[in-house]
Amino acid sequence: MTEETPTRVDMEKIVSLCRRRGFIFPSSEIYGGLSSCWDYGPLGVELKRNVKEAWWRAMVQERDDMVGLDTSILMHPQTWAASGHLEGFADPLVECKDCHLRWRSDELEGDRCPSCGGELTEPRMFNLMFKTFMGPVEDEASVVYLRPETAQGMFVNFQNVLNTTRKRLPFGIAQIGKSFRNEITTGNFIFRSREFEQMEIEFFVKPGTDSEWFNYWLEQRLNWYVKLGIKRENLRLREHGKEELSHYSRRTVDINYLFPMGWSELEGVANRGDFDLVQHAKYSGKSLEYFDDETKEHFLPYIIEPSAGVDRSVLAVLCDAYDEEADKEEIRVLLHLHPSLAPFKVAVLPLSRRENLVKFAKEIYADLRQCWVVSYDDAQSIGRRYRRQDEIGTPFCVTIDFQSLEDKQVTIRERDSMNQIRVPRAELQKTLEAKLEGERFDTQPLWTTKG
Ligand code: GAP
Image (tube, rainbow, N blue to C red; front, side, top):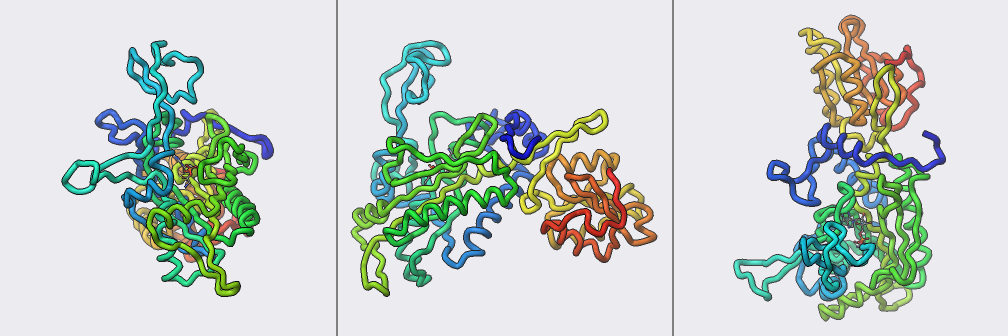
């Protein structure tokens, strides 16, 4: 693979790896699955958690102009009237008069059913919000919606955050959480599903400084993906044309990734102006104005919104990390995952199941687990075990052999280069820590081989 050319992996290979190794399963699979819903398995849950932690760390923990929030999925129904979702969050839908399958009319080529060729109904608007009822009575008065974005929870808490944190402009609110959309067209694995997670920032700025902040956030967000190891050439910016801007947006630029099905949206950065605060002030009757102590002005801040999908980030990370290498007569499948994202940071592998070796290996395993999520594997040949760890992106394997019992040294093997170094057991943790932080693997090797 060259550095400059965008590379695209086959989606089937990703789906198969995820299924086989326990990253992602179809939801309720024993009942035949539930369309466009997915369950994250033992490795998937770690990967997803690491993606969210990396975002939280960079966007909240390491900044002093951001606070976090975790708002409820069910919100007052007026929220959705104010946000425009009740009226405008809809796609045009047609139904086949013969097979009754439904299609998005704006995505159809031709005027017949793509499945059976039957005649289609006239398009009607279909709202994408999931509706349910709150309390025991199922009537119009008890209708509530599952949120289609996490953003609204942050707008309606703007004053609460101001009052409790004494933050001054510019500052942001960040949230990670589930969102639900009754998408008509789903597919491409976890790319578009009906239940998904978002990582959203609402960044409040003084009107007039919004263009500058928009550019700042676009750059920050693009760099975040690159820092996590996604190849720059697989990322692209796409400016929305005037006609495709959402009702709330003054400007939107998508960060697109070269997914297996082609360039598609990974994240959207929007300049929402004061649309949301105006609307919520109007519908709630509460003032959402900000008072600037320096200029003594009251005004509604503008909002810059970088809105990312957790599941799409996981998919992009997996696609970008996937690699196949010719290895003797086999193919070595490996995930070049950034160490901070890898489900297991380290795997502990005793060369045999001999009692004294296992005891030593288990001690090391117990120690390392205090620091990281670590795997222990003693089944089959060492070569096979290395391949198993390569395939799930484990950056380092620690091998304990018979000599280890005598010289109290162990072997660390690196995933990408397959280089090995031997270190004293007493220095193992410190060495791994440095290597996981990005220290070159070939510095001060005691000895180096391939394996
Ligand atoms: N608050 C703005 C907002 O929600 P959006 O472009 O509709 O904007 C933001 O969604 C991000 O959420 C998208 O870039 C995508 O990563 C993710 N997303 C949206 N719909 C999704 C779906 N059906 N399945 C998975 N991810 C989705």
